[in-house]
Length: 98
Image 1 (cartoon, rainbow, N blue to C red):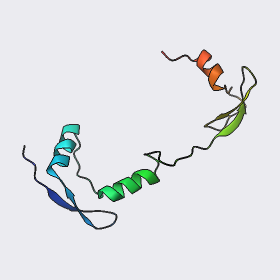
Image 2: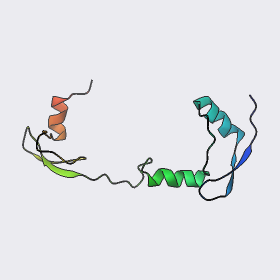
Image 3: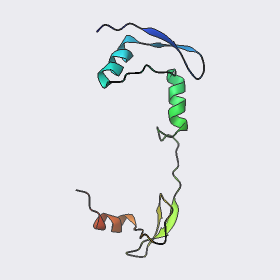
Image 4: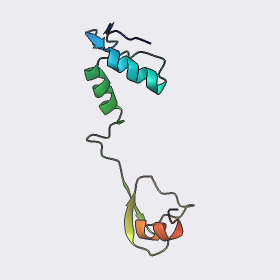
């Protein structure tokens, strides 16, 4: 199927951008059914703002004490009293990767 460049108006900034034949071919090969609604700049800004890109993102960490060795550690979730929390060393012995 032959693709030709298309001009699309960005849903966020209302600027026109080109959806190139190469990009269309890529979208088609990935099975994407919809054309982009945002220009490349707005897509990048949206990705960064929602943390999809992880650029500059700092995950909130919570202090905890390891239930196995007693070492102070930090975890990316708020610990609950009814669930044990482990430091990374103890967790790797309890749940080894396959």
